[in-house]
Amino acid sequence: MKIIEGTFVSAEDIITELRRIRECLDVLLTRETAKSGSVVWASQATLARRYDTSKSTICRLLAEAVSSGHVRMIRPHGSVRKYHVAEFDAFMVSISIASCKSI
Image: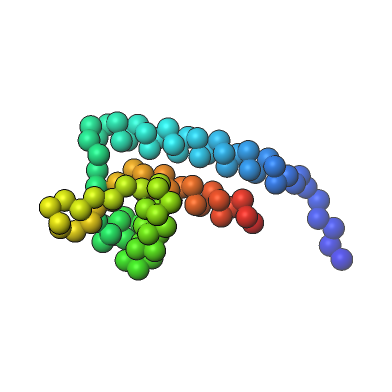
């Protein structure tokens, strides 16, 4: 039987560190939005490429984000739906942190 020696980190410390990381990411997202000078909107296909995932996965995530009020959606002149990129980025960060908390 092997005996493991070393220093272990508590779950509370990990959660605290993840909160600090989220705060840093929120600040960075805010800065990037401010730098652009205007709101950036993207289609489902563009967001799928941005996150290197399938369009069906992005559609599911966008449906959740829009219905929960985290992401705004527009449909200019009845054309393709566009989603607020910075809000979607923040939503993705929030669900990734939430999934880490459930572990």
